[in-house]
Image 1 (cartoon, rainbow, N blue to C red):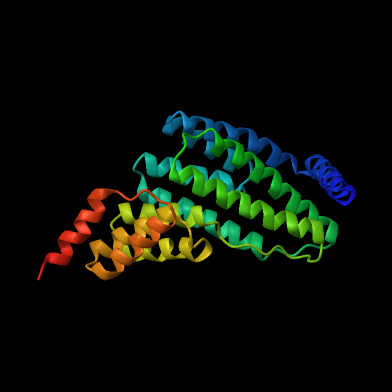
Image 2 (image 1 turned 30 degrees about the vertical axis):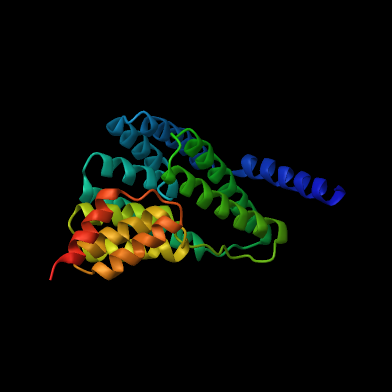
Length: 248
């Protein structure tokens, strides 16, 4: 019990230090990013996109603001723009994963800043109506937070090891799909599943790609995986796969 309290206290101290030392640009950008997600919840897509753009203008390395802008652009059916925005978002995560720090203290501060941002994302997602998508995103965010917190507690590595979050790959795949680029969509949906094998929405979307490209057996198997993951499969999609199976 005493050890648990000590670890919690240490985490709180680290959090307060990280907040105090977070670059001013990122702190200002977070205000606009938070407003963007609130506008997304209200389905005010244009204003949400504007808020995310303001966040990015302040801090061009802000991954979550790029993700939010990409999501808003998809909602506005600006798919070509969404693809470019989400590709940038993915590149920022890759760059973060390979970033090297001069000292262990700098690495720890960076990790704690990321935890602060994930906590903000979790609060945003919790305001969404309950759904399979909400539960998937909450689970993924909590998993990512746990992994980073473990690194903070161990303090064993100066480099940040991470992958592109599965929700970024999912959204990029959706933008490609809506642009008619099925091969690119398939690649991104597979990337999402590779990170999170229980990602029901990504499995469902991958099944749609298989159906559209005539790979019926793969579509059927992937849809079963989506159902096993707890995703509520659209009966019309199931029927479409059954109908295709009956064709000679």
